[in-house]
Amino acid sequence: MPCKLQLTDVLSMSSLRQSFPRMPISVGLVIPVFNRAHLIQQTIESALAQSTAFDEIIVIDDGSTDNIVDVIAGFGEQILFFRQPNQGVQIARNYGVSCCTCEWVVLCDSDDLLMPSFLERFTQWSQSHPSNDVIYCNFHLFGSINFAEDKLASCPFDYLKDSRIEDDFAFDIPDLLNRNLRFQPFFSSGCMIRRSFFKALNGYDSKFNGIGAEDWDFTLRAIVSGRVAFCLLPLLKIRRHSGNDSANQLHMSLGEIAVLRTSGFREWPLSQEDCVEVARQISIRSTSALNSAFAAEQFDLVIELYSSINSSDRNWRHYLKFLISLSPGFVRRLVLLLIRTRQRDVE
Image (cartoon, rainbow, N blue to C red; front, side, top):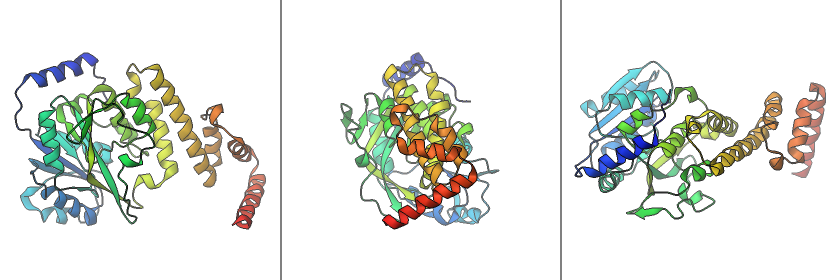
């Protein structure tokens, strides 16, 4: 289970780091993979094309059944390759970090791409700002649909207001937990983590393995227990395709609700404002999940989710969907037929 760092531990770690002279840092790359032999070659090639080389590149095969072994063998001794029975990406990441011997670890999913200057920019900045524990990266989405806008640019509010910004990196971001609850641009793929900090947090919590937004738990725990920075440059490309969990909105919303309710970040002393925001976000995500569940005719789930929505966030449509879900099956079928007929007439 994830451990709970004390604030004094975090402060003492930062003070010690600042007292030593800055030395070149070592950075390893961990790539978990499951049945993506057709994509991981591009990911590894992007890692090998860095202007500053990784000290280690580690691939963790999470029980793949495709030809991943042949693909990795083609890179020879440039790649450290480890295998485990299929247990999910969270455990695969934890295993990869445990195999790494470097001071810092970069995580990258097996279908994503690092820009050539990624590691050079990250190592240069972390050497001149040694007190940070984890650095996240802005990114572009790519795949079947091209997205011109980077992730940070899509934020509906000024995410970095009053932050310190130096050399295209933001740090000391005020009210970061509250901001991250409202908008989440900090993805595991492309983040660089101090290995000692990762171990202190006990890595990713396997209880969230397989749910939507399973990585968010680690991000929230990192925010409340360490010093977080963010690279404004989109030095990462995250692939968007039908295999992404984020393509399933109901799955994502339910996962986010589970994280908000049970993540270890809630064990920390949160401000009143943050507690209120957590409750508000559970309500907002429950609203989204209710609409998706009704569209999927998962009526028991609609009934369950309705009670999680704050009264201020409910409207007559939510109440109607709740009442329809409570109705006998033949009534639901009749009402849904009328609704769909009406929709076709409007179109």
